[in-house]
Length: 99
Image 1 (cartoon, rainbow, N blue to C red):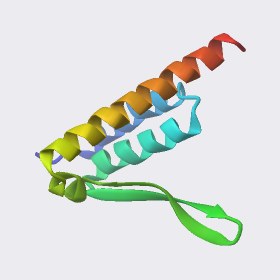
Image 2 (image 1 turned 60 degrees about the vertical axis):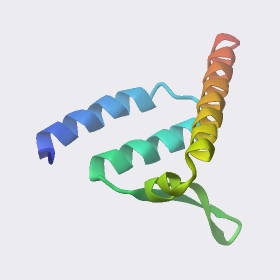
Image 3 (image 1 turned 135 degrees about the vertical axis):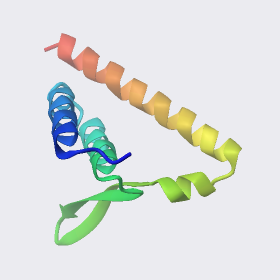
Image 4 (image 1 turned 180 degrees about the horizontal axis):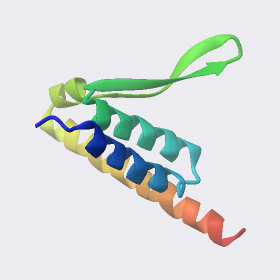
């Protein structure tokens, strides 16, 4: 089912509020990439950064390639990424409490 423009706008506003609460740049950019891909229904996406005089991929996501991984590898990657996000979130909360 395709979403209408009003529904997409409501999602964007909700996401914008959530993004304002994220302090960690890595978590923020991953969230932006993930949510943007959902809104535009993209299978993959990347965020590039300029380092010196070179353009480099900083973040990349690709659902097709993720699905192609063996189920065990896919599960382990999911567990690893989930734990990494939890660690970054807890670290962010700790940093906020100390400021």
